[in-house]
Length: 331
Image (cartoon, rainbow, N blue to C red):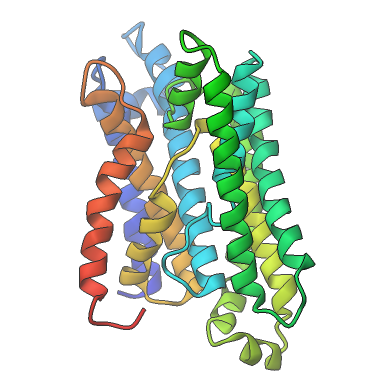
């Protein structure tokens, strides 16, 4: 399929997912009633405004932004490292953000403090990974050293999370830490979204505008340098932008796995390897996927299921299918 129709179809799927999510829940709303109220601002139902504007619409916006950002970051990392097994947490941002949030919850900080601590922890983890890779001699494989540094930092912060959980009060703090680490959009409020969405927008634009450079980099680092692409600067730009949007998302809704790993594969299968198409397509598909999963998480049972569980249950079987499909092909 050509790029424009494919993006148009993906946008239509996202809009359908929005209408579905607006209407489904313990307080059902028909799509016509939701659209009429959003357009006119008038309704005979006294509860409709509360349901839509205070509960569902903030979750929908957050799900689209978070899912799109994670998928975009995953696609950018997979293109930069030329490895389809890479995900947004390859440099330790998830474990760093998890430690920051766990420490804030242990110290009984308010919600804003937990989010700020998670954001700072994610940035700190990636900075440490980059610093370790830069301290290694230049004759080594810089990409491999960077990935290994990320693995080291991820393991370190995972151990710190375990230490915080070990010292936490098992009656109060430990359940809160455990629930946060599983990811959720249940407590999203509209006033929390502008700052996060601004960071996501800035990072996403930087990554999308670098799509053609990622295309050149896919031919190899020597070829990219020959064509005038500053590969080191490009890597730092992608890492900075992807870390910014990933840390922002994790600070908002906790740890949400698999979206950044699986969705870029779907975008690549549908749109091909061109990052100028793959990156925005990943954002649209990632937003639709997380919105669908969040709708399932809040409606499938009487008590809401953490969204990280839903994404893992859905992502693992799909990735197994991809592995079987690619088993006889070159990655």
